[in-house]
Image 1: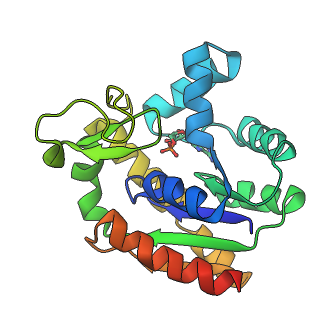
Image 2: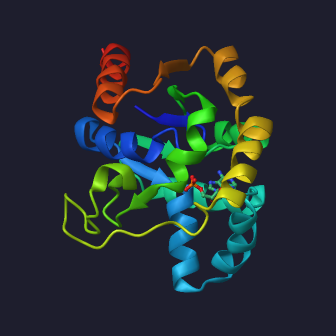
Length: 208
Ligand code: AMP
C-alpha cells in the first residue's frame, strides 16, 4: 500500500505518520525531514532548501522530485509520503515514477493552526508535542531526548506556509478525487489518538 499523506502544516501529518508506519509496516518518507537532514549536514541541497524553508515557500520542484525518486528506489514494500507532493507538478511527476494507491487527507480548520504550530515542540524520534500539554517538561516522553522547536515554526513563516498550502497544495485534493483515490479524515479538534482511530478505519477498509 503506497500512501500520500495530505494536510495543511500543523494538521498532524508527522504525528499520524509515525503511528501509521508502526501499525501498517510502511516506510515513512518525509521531504521536510530530508531537507532538514541536508541542512544539518551542510549539503548543497540543504543550503538551497534553507532559503525557501525560512521563507515558508516550496523548495524548487526539480530538487524535490529528485530526492523523492531516489529515496523510493531504496524502499522495499509499501510507503507513506509525508509532505510530498505539494503541488500539481509534483503530483504529476510522482505518477510517472510511483503507483499511489491512496491519498489520505487530514482536514483541519486552518484557524486553529497558527497557535498549534507556533507552540509545537519536536523530538528527533518523530514525536510531537504542544507546549500547553508539556507542563514545563523539555524532554521526550517516548525516548527521553531533549525537545526542540523547528526554526520555521515562527508566526511569520507559518503564515507564509499556510498561504502556500492554500494556494498550491490544497488543490491536490481535487487531483486525487478525480483519480478516485482521495480519503478524507475530518480531524476537527480531535486528539491524535482519536484521529488515528479514524485513520485506521480508512486504511483497514482500504487494505481488505
Ligand atoms: P514540512 O516538514 O513537511 O512541514 O516541510 C517543511 C518545509 O520544507 C516546507 O515549508 C517547504 O519549504 C519544504 N518542503 C517540504 N516538502 C516539500 C515539497 N514536497 N516541495 C517543496 N518544498 C517542500
